[in-house]
Image (tube, rainbow, N blue to C red):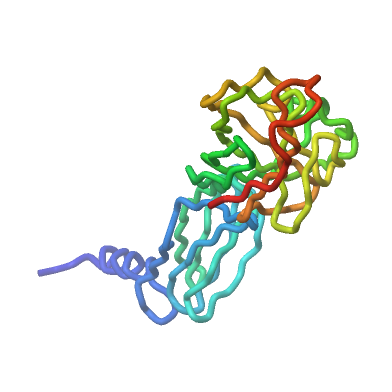
Length: 261
């Protein structure tokens, strides 16, 4: 049977168009395409491709944010330091084959639902913790930032840990959260405070509110904000003296440290 020469040439070009310099079909894949940041603000996926391949990274706009890197073994750990949508562009060693691999990086969120030790009648349940690197806006954009005395000293890029929690009053008397306070401490031992600097600022949606009745609980949110990265893998809450009323002569209980059980 007669086969046209043009068809033979076209077939040959097509067959070679998906192969590397060794004549092997070029393949590229990722171990994960949906990533979550770690508390250290790193997310990693593993790239598997032919030997001596190369790869680069593009952002969601198609701009190259990491130049071409050769991977002699065909294996590479690809790291990301910011959330967003990316494309890993893998190329064969002869540059003739390109594979585009999409990746989504999300903030670190952990659902704990763990209780702390008690300080007097108070006990806390940490429901979830979220880590974010945020970009400062010209004006404060939420209550936590509005109440920050040193907003001007906050860096253009800063770090925020958001803690969703419940506080329970297990006692027989109400707890006045106008005079009873608690502040979180990070893993480096830094205590974050409502009047703290831009390196250790804290805002809480429960403290300063109405009294917590006996045997009742209240949901709240803590915001820990800093110019520097920090972690709260071993979160501690420093609880002040616990008061039933602002004008009482003696507190219900001495203060202490609430730690995750």
